[in-house]
Amino acid sequence: MTVAEKTEKKSGGIGEVISVIVQALILALLIRTFLFQPFSIPSGSMRPTLLEGDYLFVSKFSYGYSRYSFPFGPDLFEGRVWADAPERGDVVVFKLPSNPRLDYIKRVIGLPGDTVQIREGALMLNGEPVEREAVGTIDDVDITEQNRPVQVYRETLPNGVSYRTLDVTQGTVGDDTREFVVPEGHFFMLGDNRDNSADSRFNVGYVPHENLVGRANIIFFSIAGGASPLEIWRWPTELRFDRFFRSASR
Image 1 (spheres, helix red, strand yellow):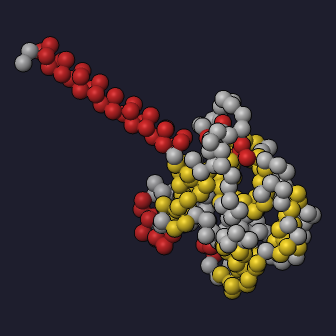
Image 2 (image 1 turned 60 degrees about the horizontal axis):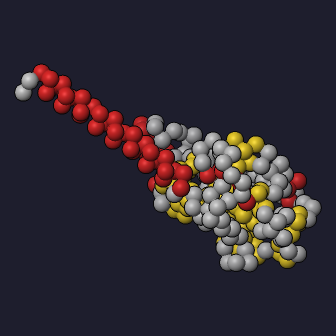
Image 3 (image 1 turned 90 degrees about the horizontal axis):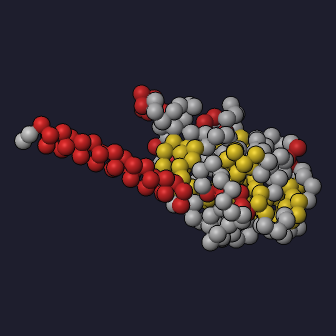
């Protein structure tokens, strides 16, 4: 083999590697944009359902696509294409209406036209109390962020979706609200950690359909103690194996 042939073979090999890398990156971008996007839980507002350190997949196709389905939210079009509405009780990732650069994750409680209110800590939907049952307490700081037992309730929405909520402190400002009427094309969101959630009761407001990014599906990784997944040496003590491959909404 001549020097020229060796050089050509080497160049072809490098070019092939670069081509494979570029194709892999394009494929990953397409999957993230149109199918599934990984998401990490940034706060305790969805406790006990979701904990800080949970990593989950969000299905991008569940509600169709809007400008916020794409990285950086380019102003390509208005509204949604292949649009579908979330169901009551879905846990969704959405762009904060007042600052679309921020991702929030909450539970859909109110659909367009619904009235929503909290009275003495109990959820009212269209004038009727949502089924709410006290199911005991949780005394685990990793779940509640409290060094004491915390009361847990199970809510069951009219469509049968059931989940647990925390009542960390009674009589807080979020335990008694005005009646909210959800506008057309918007949704009312609540965190499951009712006393520690910035949601539609407060600064979040009603969330436009366009701002929905996707539905939370499944937890694929979870680590406690504020550890990064890259801190492999902390895995033996901090991994929450019991949370792997659990539903992200129940």
